[in-house]
Image 1 (cartoon, rainbow, N blue to C red):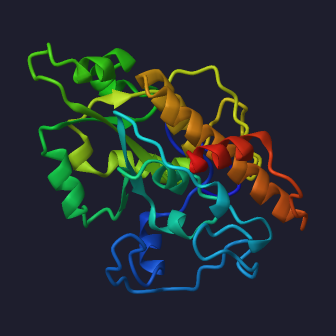
Image 2 (cartoon, rainbow, N blue to C red; image 1 turned 90 degrees about the vertical axis):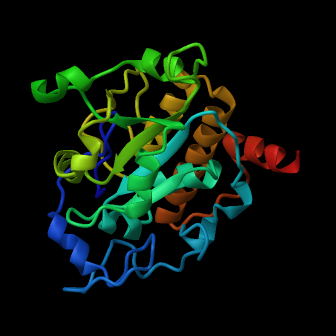
Length: 268
């Protein structure tokens, strides 16, 4: 993701080719060596940052990190360059939901653990992606399919719903969707929501274009994981406010309402 937010169900904005994966010396998720081609310099690369949350140290997010549990899970397939961007919101999901799995996408090297999980019959995975093309219309399902997956009365028995989010720019997400054969057999779940984005760190093309964390919040709420959705929403707001203040070199003098709720949860 660069300085545009993601559309509902997938990231948005101009992107880079899959060959940019080779620009990173090691896979940020696994540490696997990659041959570097050029130096990557993100905006704000000279800012002093917290080594844990990667926000500017002026307004560290760590005091507000709170965990939650959900019946649904998230698997993020992340473009390699997205790991390097401190404004990435996909990592907020993993902070709040420890069961989250993050995989780095390389076109010719599918992650072995991801393939293993996709073959695990305990899970019912859904690819979060818009239903705007006719060639995969037969795979499109609604949120009722997620609820059915959890129902032990169904023929397959109760399964764990998994939301697969393609984390990158919109162009990168399209590439991941189209060039990952292991996703071809999975149902596609477009997110239907009236939520408007509150993400202020990247310029949205439309208020209807949600960032990755906001997509996850809405999926959790619609799937019945209200508590987890609320915690992630508060954590996203804390991230948004902390980073926004740091960009103007301003220290937040007092916790925001979302931060206060997170602090109270950490004390429970």
